[in-house]
Image 1 (cartoon, rainbow, N blue to C red):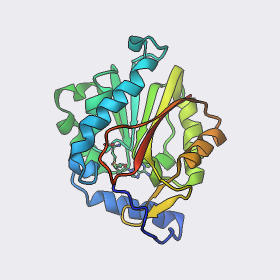
Image 2: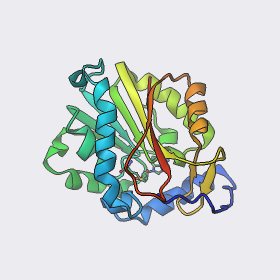
Image 3: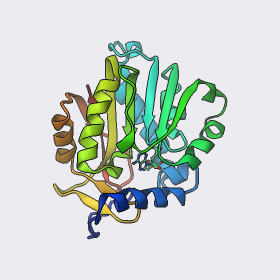
Image 4: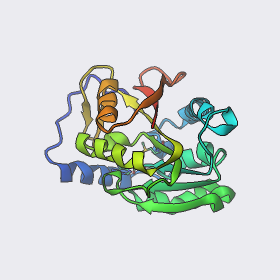
Length: 230
Ligand SMILES: C[S@@+](CC[C@H](N)C(=O)[O-])C[C@H]1O[C@@H](n2cnc3c(N)ncnc32)[C@H](O)[C@@H]1O
């Protein structure tokens, strides 16, 4: 989570290693909110409040056009976002996550409301295709840095097809200060520039409905941006 803008990390040698290293890293992390947030559990309430305020105007309850039947939480981890953001706003939530250990902890972590979590899908997003027209909201936060550029564009394309009528995709992620993409060889992830995300969205044929910087995070962390796409 910390801003590593001064570091010069070696670029990943090959795709298989890039994905395997991330898998290995996450399998060593505790299935807790603090684990999900790299030791920054304290930013979770600010994050969730910012997300709620960003999402609500799109939903019918906020006088928008998007239904609140079913959401998908991508790179869900143990379900921090499912529990605190999506289940309070949607009837049903599906989760997709590459680490089985996190999914195994999800229902216990979420508690009583986990009866409204339908599918727990263990898959890398690079290999995952949402069912066509299934989701009112596809939420993707702090995970897309784990995809290569090519896989990112293709994932956006598949998500576009996975949206129900008036459905939207939300991307919330770290954005590097410079125009360069940075690579972190500890968790094997990229931090892209805002332009680089916008390019990938455009290349996938997405339309950006709204974009906003998350406010109130401590200094020293990357800037975090939210995008609403269709
Ligand atoms: C920083 S955590 C964020 C978890 C959750 N989105 C949140 O904000 O609480 C990143 C999550 O992405 C998952 N992940 C990493 N690479 C992935 C991939 N290729 N496909 C799906 N999930 C992945 C990790 O296992 C981990 O659960």
